[in-house]
Image (cartoon, rainbow, N blue to C red; front, side, top):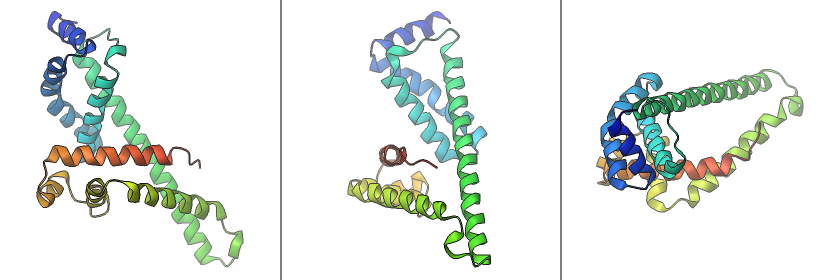
Length: 188
């Protein structure tokens, strides 16, 4: 690792906001483009990179890098993208499973003998999700619903609500963290 990177990393570990700002300004957009190439979703790529920087700041004292800081950031982004792709694949599998079972029970008159667990899991997830969304602060809830239900981009939401794009992203991140925490106990 070159001297500048070492110095910045040490300052970052010591809690220097200037060092963090330097790293953010230097790598944020290139990492977003890199993540977008993998995910093919610019909003999700930005969310992922923002989360990466939050984790870097929160875990800065534990960072132990043996290569370059740049390589560390790109590798972290790549690994986070792989996790997103795995999650997409898993969600797609569950969605397909539920659709297949719903079609099965419609086409065959087996009453309660069709797969009952899928309906229970779906209802439990939907109830928890609705409860968490309804408990969000009003602006956070509105932004989240515009993003996920109305499928508006961050920029569209910012324009509609006269907010900055960063405010929109931050509110969506807050909502996602609360939803993730609430749904982590549901098992399949």
